[in-house]
Length: 322
Image (cartoon, rainbow, N blue to C red; front, side):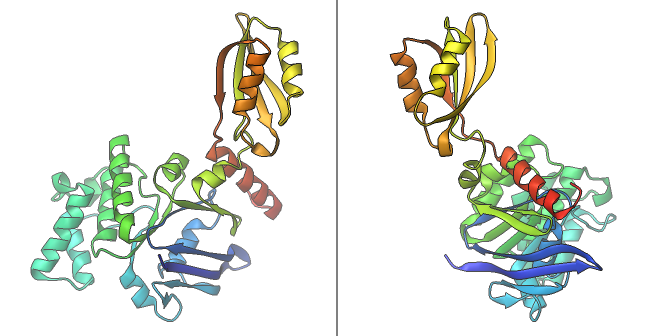
C-alpha cells in the first residue's frame, strides 16, 4: 500500500526529562493505527512532532515523503490534525471558523463553500452552524475540531481522542466516518477507549515512558492476554476437588482456577499451555468423564489486561508514575 508515515528514532526532551525516547514505526495507506499509552507516556508529544507543532530533539518523521524537520509546511499540507481539547476561537460560529480555516488552506469562492459544506455534512454540524463555539457542548466542540481536520481532505489524519465528549450515538457516527475515510487515507488516533481500538483500528502501537513497547493488530495484542484461549466450564452434580483434579491432569492444561460453587454446580477457568486453543479437548474430556456441563465457553482475552500489564511494567522500570 505504501508508507505514508515513517517515524525514525524520534526523540523529544524537555530539559532533562525525556518525553519521547527513540520512537520508530511506520503507517501505511489504508491503516487506522491506534496510538495507545497511559497519561504522560508521550503520545500527544509524538503526534505534535509528526504534525509539525513541536520540533524533535532528535530523529525525524516523513509524512508522504516530506521530512518534518526540513519541509514542515509541506507536511502540514498533507495532514489533518485534531489536537487534544479541539481548540477553536470561542466567539466564532462553526461556519465562520470553518470558513476561516478553509481560507488559510487557500480555498475561496465556490470551492471554499463546497469544502465547508462537505466537512459540515460529514460531522453532522448542520444544527449548530450559527451558534457561538463557546456555547457548544463538549461533544459539538469536538465535532467542530474534527470538521477542520478533514476540511482539506488530507491523505493523513492525526487525531487525539477523536470521540472525547461524544455520546454513544455520536461515537458510532465518528467511528463509521473514520472507517470510511481510511479507505484512501492513513489515520493515527490516540484514545483511552480500548473498545474503540478493537472497533476501528487495524493496528495498535502501545507506548509507555516514551518508548514503543508493543506493535500489532488488535487480535495479536489480545492474544497476549493471560486469559486468552482459557476455558470457562461449569459442571453440575460433581465434587469440586474431583473436577479440578482431573482437569489439571489433562494434556495441554497449564493450571486450573476455581471460580465459584453454587447450587450444586462448580465453575473453573482452565488455562492452556502457551495460550493455545484447548476448548475441544476440554469439552471432549468432560463428556468422556460423564460430567453434566452447565456451561462451557472459550475466553478471547482482553485488550485492557494486556495494556495494563505492559504499560505498568514499562512505567515501573522507567521509574515514572502512572
